[in-house]
Image (cartoon, rainbow, N blue to C red):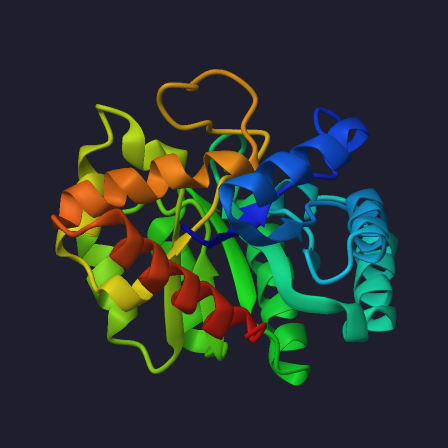
Length: 260
């Protein structure tokens, strides 16, 4: 089967020294492309480096993870400037969004929301999709996206409810959710239900490597070559053959990122 990994971090310290091997393994399994997502200013630079080292395979997605929204305005300014300097080399803005899991004071929430809105506006200005991280902030994330009206949205590593998923489908935008290794976990009942009942054209495959490896590798280092395990689980949930599911997911990802 052929597939792409729409969200990974090959720039992570757990992977970057082994990228030749990881990419070779991925290609042997049928991987056609990976999309490395930034989470900080230093990671942006590593991701651009990887896109140049592995052209037409490693694609760059630049943005600031909400955990770094608390950093000062100069840091944010540098991040926006770096993204603007590399517009011709990037496919989307991400990962950006909201994360209330560890700290959720009103001040931190407001700061994250402000930075999130700024990145969405930047993406709209340059006609780029956004890749969204949302943790313990489902409705705030939804409301900001509804208000800011980005053109294309990928909710990476989707972990919200079926109800919110259906609300996103009503919005006038191109909407996708990233399905990763979590769908193979036995206790992942909500995500399995969404894959079973949701619109096939709203799904894309991702790993979030080196995190969230699928069963039977759960708890170990993740990598793009594990995507077929995710596709297999999704095919079983939809009761269709794996090749058909793989073709649908590949088309969804290629269309979203404009690489076909």
